[in-house]
Length: 222
Image 1 (cartoon, rainbow, N blue to C red):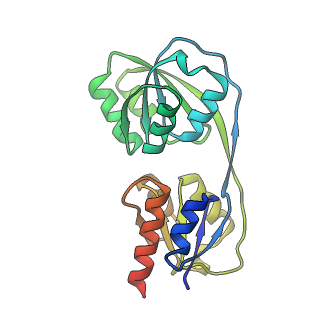
Image 2: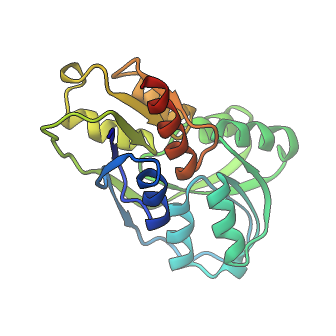
């Protein structure tokens, strides 16, 4: 039976997808998230969110009614916003796609960008290049949870660039060059390729899609 390492603690239904496919699971949180306090805001016309953690921290500090319109990255981020009564104008799979949309359709507007301390540069850099006004607010902190594994895995499931860095800082890829890295998206995959060439990308940016890609790829190896 193949064994995969998930770099985040999975939900029970997600674990079941692996177990029903006869795949053994080891899991841990490769990163730690800490919500940060920030200034109390009101009357936010347009807000940008690139992660569920950003939404959760925001909602812990600000009433949802304070925001008129949201723009976000990821289906799960959109769902979380809508579940809390927030209006989502545009959702894209990747930050670079959202940046392109904002440049094309909202280049005269201004935004509040709620993000973590380790965030990708696509959105702020593109907004700056196109003279689009925005205020960046750091609402959560990501730290690496380094853990050394003294065993081999058939595949490792990665869900963020930070998770990739955390795993490979503690585990030397040269010791296990055959291990498959299954990544949630192209940004995470780009980070993984700094450490290994054995990388595949899920068909959608969801945990379930990462699991499905791992199961399918491992079966093809048999």
